Image (cartoon, rainbow, N blue to C red):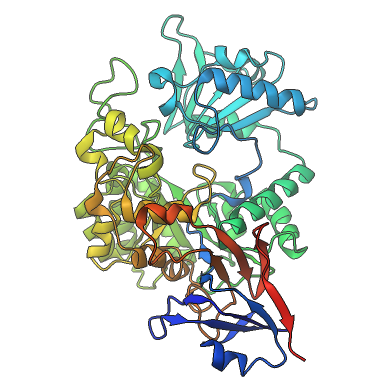
Length: 551
């Protein structure tokens, strides 16, 4: 099947042919890119789609998120995404949800997205707050960071937890200051190992529904390739069913935590040569080295501006691994198996440990192959650390939307003005000529490429305040981070990331040109259509592409 998309402003991201008017796709692959006149002359037997002057870019590539878990649970986000702006709102919204969606026997009620940074007193809810929702239903509320949860008394009783329960390495358990009892808050590995690991799995039917919701949300923002970081092995059959059955048209790259049982799914499969099979690829391994600056558990070399609790002056957070040799061993395992490595670090102390371990593993394995390791998030990366990762061939992937969503929180509470101004320093990487990518770590941040691009060039917080504008980048550099450079990170640069013959017909159609619109208006650009391998997989409700076929 041949389809010509024409009468458009094509930004190809191909330096040899940066602009065009039309793209001809045959059997999912681009066969020609050029002017309307020359491609119409080649398209006698093709379906014609008139894009009416809209802007076309390569399909956006997500460099890090959690696709399979993004839309499993109900969201309780604050403004401007949702309307949960206080603990009272959280309680009321949860009650409303439960009234309309009763929890079945044996199931838990799990919500996501609450943001304590916007609550009065900047405090997380406690078990007493969640007990106001219900003391009979097991309830878990996961912070927007994804690194902390709060449970009600029912969960604590159900799991047999008490004030004597020990936190696992790299984890946090919080207590009521007056009584010394658990207050229901669990952070980092304590959340993962003590709470979420014990949670009943949602049904296959609900998971398939969630995956279809995720497909719609990502494709509606122009994504044609997504990442599933910290991929759980038991999700593999469902994901492969959904991609194979055509319920998911996006390409999905999956990464398993190498420090878990899941790593068995990597063996003999997750190599740089791995290819997509019905839109699914097992891409590599992931190691998590610290927590999140949002909840002040990221591991820093200098103390937090305001410590999270009284009496913790000088507090710098902590790493996931107390023994660096454990990190070295994990890195060596990835290198010896030729697994691409995602190294998740937010704090600069965690980055120091990561780079020290990586250098030691390099020396001990003698690795010379380009496995394109990725430093994920790198919120507080220093200039000297950027020099090190450039020397080591490590790609930085920045969670840059922290500038927008939590820039004010970082400046006033977490890091102070000096350090907050240089979180996610895209400009520093760009000045070094480094490839880098940007991501939103969904469900931590919703998939919204236009917001991410806008923040990259303006570095404005949600209140409109400039934050470290010297670390902003130009629009072309930002676009590379979500197209051709993201394709390179995924070992997909030969088939994706630019619009040129021989690559997939993956495109996004926009109602304005991000290269010419004012920076403040970039976030308001709308996705008119998303095209995967030549086929429209998302189309805005109020847009009709004009299709016809030549005689």
